[in-house]
Length: 488
Image (cartoon, rainbow, N blue to C red; front, side, top):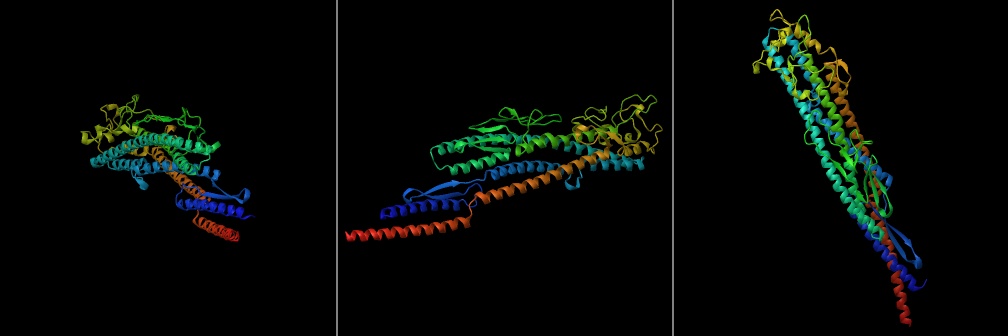
Protein backbone atom coordinates (compact mmCIF):
# COMPACT_ATOMS: atom_id res chain seq x y z
CA UNK A 1 0.00 0.00 0.00
CA UNK A 2 1.41 3.40 -0.95
CA UNK A 3 1.44 6.28 1.48
CA UNK A 4 -1.08 8.11 -0.69
CA UNK A 5 -3.57 5.22 -0.62
CA UNK A 6 -3.03 4.80 3.10
CA UNK A 7 -3.77 8.48 3.63
CA UNK A 8 -6.84 8.22 1.42
CA UNK A 9 -8.12 5.25 3.44
CA UNK A 10 -7.53 7.01 6.75
CA UNK A 11 -9.25 10.25 5.75
CA UNK A 12 -12.18 8.31 4.29
CA UNK A 13 -12.48 6.41 7.57
CA UNK A 14 -12.46 9.68 9.50
CA UNK A 15 -15.30 11.04 7.33
CA UNK A 16 -17.22 7.81 7.89
CA UNK A 17 -16.64 8.11 11.63
CA UNK A 18 -18.01 11.63 11.60
CA UNK A 19 -21.16 10.50 9.79
CA UNK A 20 -21.62 7.59 12.21
CA UNK A 21 -21.27 9.94 15.18
CA UNK A 22 -23.89 12.22 13.62
CA UNK A 23 -26.34 9.31 13.19
CA UNK A 24 -25.70 7.98 16.71
CA UNK A 25 -26.12 11.45 18.21
CA UNK A 26 -29.44 11.80 16.40
CA UNK A 27 -30.53 8.44 17.81
CA UNK A 28 -29.63 9.49 21.33
CA UNK A 29 -31.57 12.74 20.95
CA UNK A 30 -34.57 10.63 19.88
CA UNK A 31 -34.67 8.76 23.19
CA UNK A 32 -38.10 9.07 24.77
CA UNK A 33 -39.76 10.08 21.49
CA UNK A 34 -42.15 7.23 20.69
CA UNK A 35 -42.50 8.44 17.10
CA UNK A 36 -38.77 8.38 16.39
CA UNK A 37 -37.39 5.37 14.48
CA UNK A 38 -33.74 4.49 15.03
CA UNK A 39 -31.30 5.13 12.18
CA UNK A 40 -28.56 2.64 11.42
CA UNK A 41 -25.22 3.77 9.96
CA UNK A 42 -24.25 0.84 7.70
CA UNK A 43 -20.50 0.92 6.86
CA UNK A 44 -19.15 -0.61 3.64
CA UNK A 45 -15.74 -0.53 1.90
CA UNK A 46 -15.49 0.74 -1.65
CA UNK A 47 -12.76 0.91 -4.27
CA UNK A 48 -9.19 1.88 -3.21
CA UNK A 49 -10.01 1.31 0.44
CA UNK A 50 -12.59 4.10 0.69
CA UNK A 51 -15.26 3.74 3.39
CA UNK A 52 -18.92 4.51 2.73
CA UNK A 53 -21.74 5.03 5.26
CA UNK A 54 -25.38 4.48 4.27
CA UNK A 55 -28.06 5.63 6.70
CA UNK A 56 -30.94 3.18 7.01
CA UNK A 57 -34.32 3.38 8.71
CA UNK A 58 -35.81 0.04 9.63
CA UNK A 59 -39.40 -0.64 10.63
CA UNK A 60 -40.94 -4.09 11.02
CA UNK A 61 -43.97 -3.57 8.77
CA UNK A 62 -45.99 -6.45 10.18
CA UNK A 63 -45.53 -5.21 13.76
CA UNK A 64 -46.22 -1.63 12.69
CA UNK A 65 -49.46 -2.61 10.91
CA UNK A 66 -50.57 -4.71 13.88
CA UNK A 67 -49.73 -1.85 16.24
CA UNK A 68 -51.86 0.79 14.52
CA UNK A 69 -54.74 -1.68 14.14
CA UNK A 70 -54.55 -2.58 17.84
CA UNK A 71 -54.48 1.12 18.70
CA UNK A 72 -57.59 1.76 16.59
CA UNK A 73 -59.41 -1.15 18.25
CA UNK A 74 -58.43 0.18 21.66
CA UNK A 75 -59.71 3.69 20.96
CA UNK A 76 -63.03 2.35 19.64
CA UNK A 77 -63.45 0.05 22.64
CA UNK A 78 -62.75 2.95 25.01
CA UNK A 79 -65.54 4.98 23.42
CA UNK A 80 -68.07 2.15 23.77
CA UNK A 81 -67.04 1.36 27.36
CA UNK A 82 -67.28 5.04 28.34
CA UNK A 83 -70.79 5.24 26.87
CA UNK A 84 -71.94 2.18 28.81
CA UNK A 85 -70.40 3.56 31.99
CA UNK A 86 -72.46 6.69 31.43
CA UNK A 87 -75.64 4.63 31.08
CA UNK A 88 -74.85 2.87 34.36
CA UNK A 89 -74.30 6.20 36.12
CA UNK A 90 -77.64 7.48 34.80
CA UNK A 91 -79.34 4.48 36.40
CA UNK A 92 -77.76 5.16 39.78
CA UNK A 93 -74.31 3.67 39.47
CA UNK A 94 -73.59 0.21 40.80
CA UNK A 95 -76.65 0.41 43.08
CA UNK A 96 -78.91 0.99 40.04
CA UNK A 97 -81.32 2.94 42.23
CA UNK A 98 -82.83 4.69 39.20
CA UNK A 99 -82.97 1.66 36.94
CA UNK A 100 -86.38 0.53 35.61
CA UNK A 101 -85.98 -2.70 37.61
CA UNK A 102 -85.59 -0.78 40.89
CA UNK A 103 -88.37 1.67 40.05
CA UNK A 104 -90.84 -1.09 39.17
CA UNK A 105 -90.03 -3.02 42.33
CA UNK A 106 -90.77 0.14 44.34
CA UNK A 107 -94.02 0.56 42.40
CA UNK A 108 -95.11 -3.00 43.18
CA UNK A 109 -94.31 -2.56 46.88
CA UNK A 110 -96.21 0.74 47.06
CA UNK A 111 -99.21 -0.92 45.38
CA UNK A 112 -99.08 -3.87 47.81
CA UNK A 113 -98.96 -1.51 50.79
CA UNK A 114 -102.00 0.35 49.48
CA UNK A 115 -103.79 -2.97 48.90
CA UNK A 116 -103.19 -4.04 52.49
CA UNK A 117 -104.79 -0.80 53.78
CA UNK A 118 -107.07 0.39 50.95
CA UNK A 119 -108.85 2.92 53.18
CA UNK A 120 -105.60 4.72 54.04
CA UNK A 121 -105.47 7.77 51.78
CA UNK A 122 -101.86 8.43 52.83
CA UNK A 123 -100.80 5.11 51.28
CA UNK A 124 -102.75 5.87 48.10
CA UNK A 125 -101.08 9.28 47.97
CA UNK A 126 -97.70 7.58 48.53
CA UNK A 127 -98.46 5.30 45.57
CA UNK A 128 -99.14 8.36 43.43
CA UNK A 129 -95.83 9.91 44.52
CA UNK A 130 -93.96 6.72 43.71
CA UNK A 131 -95.65 6.74 40.30
CA UNK A 132 -94.52 10.36 39.85
CA UNK A 133 -90.92 9.37 40.67
CA UNK A 134 -91.11 6.43 38.28
CA UNK A 135 -92.53 8.46 35.38
CA UNK A 136 -90.10 11.33 35.95
CA UNK A 137 -87.16 8.93 36.10
CA UNK A 138 -88.21 7.23 32.85
CA UNK A 139 -88.58 10.67 31.23
CA UNK A 140 -85.11 11.65 32.43
CA UNK A 141 -83.47 8.40 31.31
CA UNK A 142 -85.06 8.75 27.89
CA UNK A 143 -83.91 12.36 27.55
CA UNK A 144 -80.37 11.43 28.58
CA UNK A 145 -80.21 8.55 26.11
CA UNK A 146 -81.30 10.88 23.31
CA UNK A 147 -78.72 13.43 24.50
CA UNK A 148 -76.03 10.74 24.42
CA UNK A 149 -76.99 9.88 20.84
CA UNK A 150 -76.66 13.56 19.89
CA UNK A 151 -73.27 13.73 21.66
CA UNK A 152 -72.03 10.63 19.81
CA UNK A 153 -73.23 12.18 16.55
CA UNK A 154 -71.37 15.40 17.31
CA UNK A 155 -68.20 13.49 18.12
CA UNK A 156 -68.47 11.59 14.83
CA UNK A 157 -68.70 14.91 13.03
CA UNK A 158 -65.64 16.24 14.90
CA UNK A 159 -63.71 13.06 14.08
CA UNK A 160 -64.58 13.36 10.39
CA UNK A 161 -63.35 16.96 10.35
CA UNK A 162 -60.13 15.87 12.10
CA UNK A 163 -59.72 12.95 9.70
CA UNK A 164 -60.03 15.16 6.62
CA UNK A 165 -57.50 17.58 8.11
CA UNK A 166 -55.05 14.75 8.85
CA UNK A 167 -55.44 13.38 5.31
CA UNK A 168 -54.57 16.83 3.99
CA UNK A 169 -51.44 16.90 6.18
CA UNK A 170 -50.59 13.40 4.98
CA UNK A 171 -50.71 14.55 1.36
CA UNK A 172 -48.24 17.38 2.04
CA UNK A 173 -45.73 15.20 3.90
CA UNK A 174 -46.10 12.28 1.51
CA UNK A 175 -45.37 14.50 -1.49
CA UNK A 176 -42.19 15.71 0.21
CA UNK A 177 -41.13 12.12 0.89
CA UNK A 178 -41.78 10.86 -2.64
CA UNK A 179 -40.07 13.80 -4.35
CA UNK A 180 -37.15 13.71 -1.89
CA UNK A 181 -36.67 9.97 -2.35
CA UNK A 182 -36.62 10.37 -6.12
CA UNK A 183 -33.61 12.73 -5.93
CA UNK A 184 -31.78 10.87 -3.15
CA UNK A 185 -32.51 13.19 -0.23
CA UNK A 186 -32.64 12.01 3.40
CA UNK A 187 -36.39 11.83 4.02
CA UNK A 188 -36.34 9.84 7.25
CA UNK A 189 -37.48 12.73 9.44
CA UNK A 190 -40.42 13.27 7.11
CA UNK A 191 -41.28 9.56 7.27
CA UNK A 192 -41.31 9.82 11.06
CA UNK A 193 -43.77 12.70 10.78
CA UNK A 194 -45.89 10.74 8.32
CA UNK A 195 -46.02 7.73 10.64
CA UNK A 196 -47.16 10.00 13.45
CA UNK A 197 -49.97 11.32 11.23
CA UNK A 198 -50.95 7.74 10.34
CA UNK A 199 -51.23 6.87 14.04
CA UNK A 200 -53.53 9.87 14.54
CA UNK A 201 -55.62 8.80 11.55
CA UNK A 202 -55.91 5.27 12.93
CA UNK A 203 -57.26 6.69 16.19
CA UNK A 204 -60.17 8.13 14.22
CA UNK A 205 -60.68 5.17 11.88
CA UNK A 206 -58.92 1.82 11.54
CA UNK A 207 -56.57 1.77 8.54
CA UNK A 208 -54.26 -0.42 6.50
CA UNK A 209 -51.11 1.14 5.01
CA UNK A 210 -49.74 -0.23 1.72
CA UNK A 211 -46.12 0.77 0.83
CA UNK A 212 -45.35 1.78 -2.76
CA UNK A 213 -42.41 2.86 -4.88
CA UNK A 214 -40.26 5.82 -3.74
CA UNK A 215 -41.54 5.51 -0.14
CA UNK A 216 -45.04 6.36 -1.35
CA UNK A 217 -48.01 4.84 0.47
CA UNK A 218 -51.68 4.07 -0.10
CA UNK A 219 -54.06 4.11 2.86
CA UNK A 220 -57.26 2.08 3.11
CA UNK A 221 -59.92 2.12 5.80
CA UNK A 222 -60.18 -1.23 7.54
CA UNK A 223 -63.30 -2.03 5.50
CA UNK A 224 -61.30 -1.72 2.27
CA UNK A 225 -62.48 1.75 1.18
CA UNK A 226 -59.77 4.03 -0.17
CA UNK A 227 -58.76 6.93 2.07
CA UNK A 228 -55.57 8.12 0.40
CA UNK A 229 -53.77 7.50 -2.90
CA UNK A 230 -51.61 10.41 -4.02
CA UNK A 231 -54.43 12.68 -2.84
CA UNK A 232 -56.95 12.36 0.03
CA UNK A 233 -60.34 10.86 -0.67
CA UNK A 234 -63.35 12.69 0.72
CA UNK A 235 -64.80 11.56 4.04
CA UNK A 236 -68.22 13.10 4.64
CA UNK A 237 -70.90 13.00 7.30
CA UNK A 238 -74.11 14.98 7.79
CA UNK A 239 -74.47 15.71 11.48
CA UNK A 240 -77.86 15.60 13.23
CA UNK A 241 -77.87 18.14 16.07
CA UNK A 242 -81.04 16.97 17.85
CA UNK A 243 -82.36 13.47 18.37
CA UNK A 244 -85.95 12.41 18.86
CA UNK A 245 -87.45 8.96 19.43
CA UNK A 246 -87.46 8.05 15.74
CA UNK A 247 -84.37 9.95 14.53
CA UNK A 248 -81.99 8.01 12.33
CA UNK A 249 -78.43 9.35 12.40
CA UNK A 250 -76.53 10.40 9.30
CA UNK A 251 -74.43 7.99 7.26
CA UNK A 252 -70.64 8.11 7.04
CA UNK A 253 -69.35 8.22 3.45
CA UNK A 254 -65.80 7.42 2.34
CA UNK A 255 -65.01 8.41 -1.22
CA UNK A 256 -68.76 8.59 -1.85
CA UNK A 257 -69.41 5.04 -0.60
CA UNK A 258 -71.54 4.38 2.54
CA UNK A 259 -69.37 3.12 5.41
CA UNK A 260 -72.08 2.95 8.07
CA UNK A 261 -75.76 2.17 8.39
CA UNK A 262 -77.92 -0.35 6.58
CA UNK A 263 -76.65 0.72 3.15
CA UNK A 264 -73.01 -0.06 3.97
CA UNK A 265 -71.81 -3.26 2.31
CA UNK A 266 -68.98 -3.41 4.86
CA UNK A 267 -69.00 -1.03 7.83
CA UNK A 268 -65.92 0.23 9.64
CA UNK A 269 -65.25 -1.57 12.92
CA UNK A 270 -62.41 0.20 14.72
CA UNK A 271 -61.38 3.69 15.76
CA UNK A 272 -63.22 6.52 17.47
CA UNK A 273 -65.73 6.96 14.64
CA UNK A 274 -66.68 3.29 14.74
CA UNK A 275 -67.13 3.36 18.53
CA UNK A 276 -69.43 6.39 18.39
CA UNK A 277 -71.43 4.91 15.50
CA UNK A 278 -71.95 1.70 17.48
CA UNK A 279 -73.07 3.68 20.51
CA UNK A 280 -75.38 5.94 18.55
CA UNK A 281 -77.02 3.33 16.32
CA UNK A 282 -76.96 0.15 18.40
CA UNK A 283 -76.46 0.33 22.17
CA UNK A 284 -78.34 3.58 22.79
CA UNK A 285 -81.16 2.66 20.40
CA UNK A 286 -81.70 -0.64 22.22
CA UNK A 287 -81.68 1.12 25.58
CA UNK A 288 -84.17 3.66 24.27
CA UNK A 289 -86.50 0.91 23.01
CA UNK A 290 -86.30 -0.96 26.31
CA UNK A 291 -87.30 2.20 28.18
CA UNK A 292 -90.22 2.61 25.77
CA UNK A 293 -91.34 -0.98 26.33
CA UNK A 294 -91.17 -0.62 30.11
CA UNK A 295 -93.19 2.60 29.91
CA UNK A 296 -95.77 1.13 27.52
CA UNK A 297 -96.25 -1.96 29.67
CA UNK A 298 -96.50 0.10 32.85
CA UNK A 299 -99.29 2.22 31.34
CA UNK A 300 -101.00 -0.97 30.20
CA UNK A 301 -100.61 -2.64 33.62
CA UNK A 302 -102.45 0.18 35.45
CA UNK A 303 -105.00 0.66 32.66
CA UNK A 304 -108.71 0.18 33.43
CA UNK A 305 -110.92 -2.34 31.65
CA UNK A 306 -114.63 -2.12 30.89
CA UNK A 307 -116.43 -3.70 33.87
CA UNK A 308 -119.91 -3.66 32.31
CA UNK A 309 -121.69 -6.82 31.27
CA UNK A 310 -120.92 -6.17 27.60
CA UNK A 311 -117.26 -5.33 28.34
CA UNK A 312 -116.64 -4.09 24.81
CA UNK A 313 -115.05 -0.74 25.51
CA UNK A 314 -111.28 -0.37 25.00
CA UNK A 315 -108.85 -0.02 27.87
CA UNK A 316 -108.54 3.43 29.39
CA UNK A 317 -105.65 5.14 31.19
CA UNK A 318 -105.50 4.62 34.95
CA UNK A 319 -102.63 5.66 37.22
CA UNK A 320 -100.36 6.38 34.23
CA UNK A 321 -101.13 8.14 30.98
CA UNK A 322 -99.15 9.40 27.97
CA UNK A 323 -99.36 11.74 25.00
CA UNK A 324 -101.91 9.43 23.35
CA UNK A 325 -104.09 9.08 26.48
CA UNK A 326 -106.64 8.33 27.73
CA UNK A 327 -106.34 5.53 25.18
CA UNK A 328 -103.78 2.77 25.73
CA UNK A 329 -100.94 1.99 23.29
CA UNK A 330 -101.20 -1.22 21.29
CA UNK A 331 -100.22 -4.26 23.30
CA UNK A 332 -96.89 -5.98 22.55
CA UNK A 333 -96.01 -3.26 20.06
CA UNK A 334 -93.13 -0.82 20.44
CA UNK A 335 -94.36 2.77 20.80
CA UNK A 336 -91.33 4.99 20.05
CA UNK A 337 -91.01 7.91 22.44
CA UNK A 338 -93.57 6.77 25.01
CA UNK A 339 -90.87 6.88 27.70
CA UNK A 340 -90.65 10.59 26.92
CA UNK A 341 -94.35 11.26 27.51
CA UNK A 342 -95.33 8.84 30.28
CA UNK A 343 -96.75 10.68 33.30
CA UNK A 344 -99.12 10.18 36.19
CA UNK A 345 -102.75 10.76 35.33
CA UNK A 346 -103.75 14.24 36.60
CA UNK A 347 -107.15 12.76 37.60
CA UNK A 348 -105.49 10.74 40.41
CA UNK A 349 -102.97 13.43 41.42
CA UNK A 350 -104.12 15.48 44.39
CA UNK A 351 -101.53 18.14 43.51
CA UNK A 352 -103.50 18.70 40.30
CA UNK A 353 -106.93 18.42 41.87
CA UNK A 354 -107.26 14.69 41.29
CA UNK A 355 -108.41 11.88 43.58
CA UNK A 356 -105.90 9.08 44.50
CA UNK A 357 -108.77 6.79 45.56
CA UNK A 358 -109.65 6.34 41.88
CA UNK A 359 -106.65 3.99 41.64
CA UNK A 360 -108.48 1.71 44.09
CA UNK A 361 -112.01 2.21 42.78
CA UNK A 362 -111.56 2.69 39.03
CA UNK A 363 -113.58 4.98 36.77
CA UNK A 364 -110.66 7.39 36.59
CA UNK A 365 -111.80 9.05 33.38
CA UNK A 366 -115.41 9.52 34.53
CA UNK A 367 -117.00 6.52 32.83
CA UNK A 368 -118.97 4.35 35.28
CA UNK A 369 -118.41 1.27 33.12
CA UNK A 370 -114.80 1.31 34.31
CA UNK A 371 -115.61 1.36 38.04
CA UNK A 372 -114.29 -1.70 39.91
CA UNK A 373 -115.59 -0.80 43.37
CA UNK A 374 -119.28 -0.89 42.59
CA UNK A 375 -120.17 -0.96 46.30
CA UNK A 376 -118.17 2.18 47.04
CA UNK A 377 -116.61 0.78 50.22
CA UNK A 378 -113.27 2.20 51.36
CA UNK A 379 -112.06 -1.28 52.29
CA UNK A 380 -112.21 -2.51 48.69
CA UNK A 381 -108.79 -4.01 47.87
CA UNK A 382 -109.38 -6.39 44.94
CA UNK A 383 -108.28 -3.88 42.32
CA UNK A 384 -105.03 -3.02 44.14
CA UNK A 385 -104.12 -6.66 44.77
CA UNK A 386 -104.81 -7.38 41.11
CA UNK A 387 -102.45 -4.57 40.11
CA UNK A 388 -99.63 -5.74 42.39
CA UNK A 389 -99.98 -9.31 41.08
CA UNK A 390 -99.83 -8.07 37.49
CA UNK A 391 -96.17 -7.11 37.93
CA UNK A 392 -95.30 -10.82 38.04
CA UNK A 393 -97.83 -11.98 35.43
CA UNK A 394 -96.68 -13.15 32.02
CA UNK A 395 -97.06 -10.54 29.28
CA UNK A 396 -95.77 -9.96 25.76
CA UNK A 397 -93.14 -7.45 24.63
CA UNK A 398 -91.91 -6.29 21.26
CA UNK A 399 -88.68 -8.09 20.32
CA UNK A 400 -87.36 -4.95 18.57
CA UNK A 401 -85.96 -3.95 21.95
CA UNK A 402 -83.61 -6.92 21.88
CA UNK A 403 -85.06 -8.81 24.87
CA UNK A 404 -87.23 -11.97 25.12
CA UNK A 405 -90.87 -11.37 24.24
CA UNK A 406 -92.71 -13.43 26.85
CA UNK A 407 -92.01 -12.57 30.50
CA UNK A 408 -93.41 -10.52 33.35
CA UNK A 409 -92.85 -6.78 33.57
CA UNK A 410 -90.52 -7.25 36.56
CA UNK A 411 -88.56 -9.91 34.69
CA UNK A 412 -88.41 -7.69 31.62
CA UNK A 413 -86.94 -4.81 33.63
CA UNK A 414 -84.46 -7.24 35.20
CA UNK A 415 -83.56 -8.53 31.73
CA UNK A 416 -82.93 -4.96 30.63
CA UNK A 417 -80.62 -4.46 33.60
CA UNK A 418 -78.87 -7.77 32.89
CA UNK A 419 -78.44 -6.67 29.27
CA UNK A 420 -76.86 -3.40 30.39
CA UNK A 421 -74.56 -5.12 32.89
CA UNK A 422 -73.61 -7.87 30.45
CA UNK A 423 -72.93 -5.44 27.62
CA UNK A 424 -70.92 -3.24 29.95
CA UNK A 425 -68.83 -6.14 31.26
CA UNK A 426 -68.19 -7.35 27.73
CA UNK A 427 -67.19 -3.84 26.62
CA UNK A 428 -64.93 -3.44 29.64
CA UNK A 429 -63.23 -6.77 28.93
CA UNK A 430 -62.78 -5.78 25.28
CA UNK A 431 -61.41 -2.40 26.34
CA UNK A 432 -58.90 -3.93 28.76
CA UNK A 433 -57.79 -6.58 26.30
CA UNK A 434 -57.45 -4.19 23.37
CA UNK A 435 -55.58 -1.67 25.54
CA UNK A 436 -53.16 -4.33 26.76
CA UNK A 437 -52.67 -5.61 23.21
CA UNK A 438 -52.07 -2.10 21.90
CA UNK A 439 -49.53 -1.44 24.66
CA UNK A 440 -47.72 -4.72 23.93
CA UNK A 441 -47.49 -4.01 20.21
CA UNK A 442 -46.37 -0.46 20.91
CA UNK A 443 -43.70 -1.73 23.29
CA UNK A 444 -42.54 -4.36 20.79
CA UNK A 445 -42.37 -1.78 18.02
CA UNK A 446 -40.45 0.62 20.24
CA UNK A 447 -37.99 -2.10 21.26
CA UNK A 448 -37.39 -3.08 17.66
CA UNK A 449 -37.26 0.34 16.07
CA UNK A 450 -36.64 2.87 18.84
CA UNK A 451 -33.16 3.94 20.03
CA UNK A 452 -31.54 2.19 22.99
CA UNK A 453 -29.08 4.21 25.06
CA UNK A 454 -26.84 1.26 25.96
CA UNK A 455 -26.57 0.19 22.34
CA UNK A 456 -25.95 3.72 21.05
CA UNK A 457 -23.21 4.34 23.65
CA UNK A 458 -21.48 1.04 22.83
CA UNK A 459 -21.54 2.00 19.15
CA UNK A 460 -20.04 5.37 20.03
CA UNK A 461 -17.16 3.60 21.79
CA UNK A 462 -16.58 1.46 18.70
CA UNK A 463 -16.55 4.55 16.50
CA UNK A 464 -14.15 6.23 18.93
CA UNK A 465 -11.71 3.32 18.68
CA UNK A 466 -12.01 3.42 14.90
CA UNK A 467 -11.33 7.15 14.99
CA UNK A 468 -8.25 6.61 17.11
CA UNK A 469 -6.95 3.96 14.70
CA UNK A 470 -7.49 6.26 11.72
CA UNK A 471 -5.82 9.13 13.56
CA UNK A 472 -2.77 6.95 14.32
CA UNK A 473 -2.58 5.88 10.71
CA UNK A 474 -2.64 9.51 9.54
CA UNK A 475 0.00 10.39 12.11
CA UNK A 476 2.23 7.53 10.90
CA UNK A 477 1.80 8.56 7.27
CA UNK A 478 2.60 12.14 8.21
CA UNK A 479 5.84 11.04 9.89
CA UNK A 480 6.83 8.98 6.84
CA UNK A 481 6.18 11.93 4.53
CA UNK A 482 8.28 14.11 6.80
CA UNK A 483 11.16 11.60 6.67
CA UNK A 484 10.95 11.39 2.87
CA UNK A 485 11.00 15.17 2.54
CA UNK A 486 14.02 15.47 4.81
CA UNK A 487 15.82 12.77 2.83
CA UNK A 488 15.08 14.60 -0.38
